[in-house]
Length: 625
Image (tube, rainbow, N blue to C red; front, side):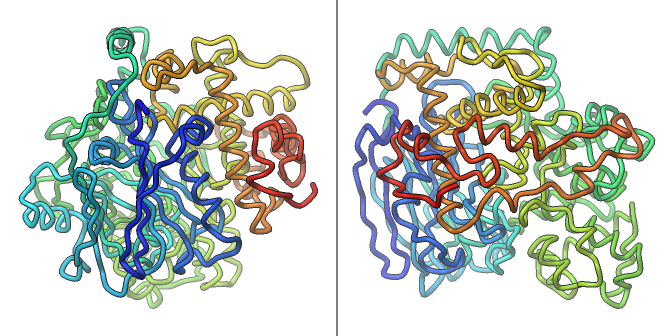
């Protein structure tokens, strides 16, 4: 098959056995790659109601369909598992160079079950898979781990994903870090890797990824690059290419879309110092730009703080990180945020969840529920940069009060008690991305309708379709008409998320959608695979994947009823651009479910939906809606 290797690996860490399987082409066409292929495999192999940190859970690393091909901005790989943070379907993605290298080494995906009796890492090289001892790596941070593995293998261009001490200690908000200092941060995937005593995966390959129509692929590539270079009509591309997403607060704070002070405030008047931690206030520390494989935008960068208490060199913080450690904590010290970001990367922990958890703790401290005696002498007050960095250090090492916070806000509130649940901002256990949905209501839909609750990127396509009336160069991607505003929004979200799922599972960076690049996804898939692929098929494939992820949760007894926005997010704000604005998010959710062919209240897919998507036999009979 062109575009794919056709092979996946299955590693039983308990026994140390490694098996390979060639998958049928129909499975790839129906589930694309990435999360889609991952949920297809996990649904078949993972039993209902298993312990996410037990031996029966499966952890998969899956490349996208276009990852590693000449298609611009296609470099993503996805981590899939049952989340220990939410006990729901869990996935996370990352760019960099690991995804393409996985294919070059001969694998579309690698899946792990069991628990190793000792720390190990997997070495994949040119079609061979070997488990090696990682006892000497256990306890090392991610940067140290990468350097040691390169020295041991003698390969400086080795592509690596690994966990740090946070994942080893089973922090439920821990992440997986790639050697481009990028993170698969969400769903607690690092804890699953740690529970299996899997320290790292090291990959090198020299194979070629075949495509069906080389000339057509190259034509599409050149046309897409020309379009992306026309930055004057793509201001978003210009902004992230110049500054990266760290420019985000400059747009999101004035518009009211950035949560401030643990989601209690919005707007410029709530935090006038936001410009000190955005745009040039960050990029002035930049040593060089960086980007994922095959990306012309290069939104990343390496930054350096030369001296003082926050001296460090690391990855340029993204908007979400600035929002978490800056806006949410009323912290206007840019150097402390750069330091916090680097600590999170070294220890392998999610910046969104960790910063949100510290903001929660500050509010508890402000209200006298916890004291300096609890925090180990740290004066945990708003805007106190040294205190924020100090508490972060305790969290990543599970020291003192950091152990209370190391599993996210929901569990921290349960451990502290005393009514702190009202300060714990999460959706079904996961801290949401830092975008207030009262600007774009589809953002709230993304938080409560996705099988991985609290996710922010899933709504990017819906926002574009709602605002501009079109999502891409295909007639099927025009905004649906008819119905009241809630019914129309639900239809828009159903079309957009379905297409967005296929877009993402093709290995694409979602900036290619939100930037308005008019990306010719369908043509690229056809040229790479040789399929007669259509936009309608892309939407159907995405809907199939979303429905199977939803069914993964339903099979465990979970329904959409439990996925709710916290009151601070759902209720009309009293200040800022949305003061007094009321949105019925329950009506929006019901409308989306209907548009997907799921029950309006519970989210259980109908038998007709399962039949139309070819899932009925795979899933069996789900509970009646």
